[in-house]
Amino acid sequence: MIQITESHFHFQASLVFSLAENFNHNKKALIGMGLRARDD
Figure: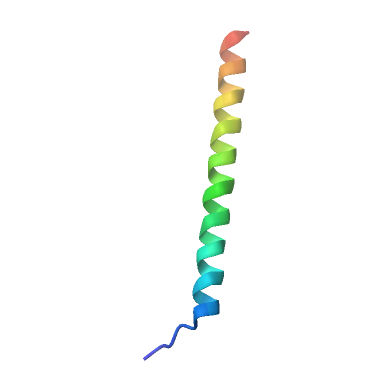
C-alpha cells in the first residue's frame, strides 16, 4: 500500500490549484486577444 503523507497531498493540491489558476488566466488572456482581434 502506498502511503500518501499529508504534506505530499497538500503539495499536489497546491500544484493542481496553481495549474488551474494559470489555465484561467491564460483563457482570459486568449479571450481578451480574441475580442481585440474582432474589434479591428
